[in-house]
Length: 334
Image 1: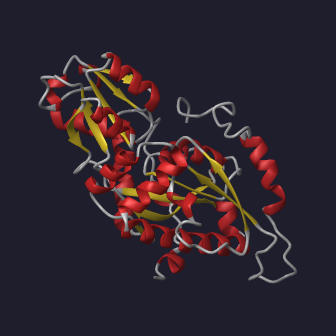
Image 2: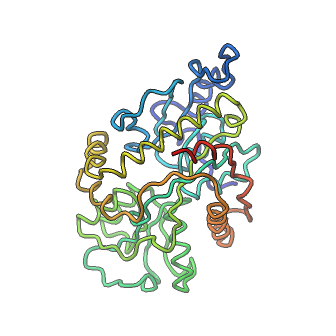
């Protein structure tokens, strides 16, 4: 799947390349634990995280230390996590519905979707600059619209174009990273910007206006994924199952107190606490970690079909083969 692969240089995180991550985890891939399937003390679970993401706050949420070692690596986006799982450099990571679609056709694809995190879609928006006369997406014909390639931002753009009766060629689409997009938007180089996350609140504070949110466009499904090789290893499967149960309890802790959650995120990231509090207050849904379902599979299939119809990917992708229900028993436990 050319055009959306990432180089090893792009995938370097904290000084480790994908190759380095793979080598670092080789001894953990087939642990020898004295023949005891429930003894995980010699196993290292390789987990992806984002800056300020929920799994970074096990300690604050009162989650006990697991009976295995954790090797967490920070990534800038779900597309990079998908690539790392496919390269056998990670056991577990989270992302939107989009990245698995872009690695589905890779030979020997390792990525499997093992559960769904129901979450916010109100923090994914179309912004227009302060003073803009645009009141409807159809008015962006001939305008410069920023988006983030191969992400929910890209998908929102495709859906809104279709809804407005516009073709890709009816606008000037500008693919930018979130930080480059912010700079372009603030400089007046964009007439609209499709973006997500806490950066939305930074732009709004500076005067940007929300033209529309992703309500009715995005499903609110964010995927938890694992490597097939890890799921095939009984001990590693057990460790992943234990990890998602702990992860689930972190979300319960977050849902209980948005101000507390905002405060610890600010301490971790340096981002203004008010942005996190506003995001929590405006969210469309609390966090809910759920097992694989036919409804969730159908939702991702609709996303894949949209990208295929727009010729963003080389051809149709049947997503069902990406889904694996081996964590269902773990995710159903309260």
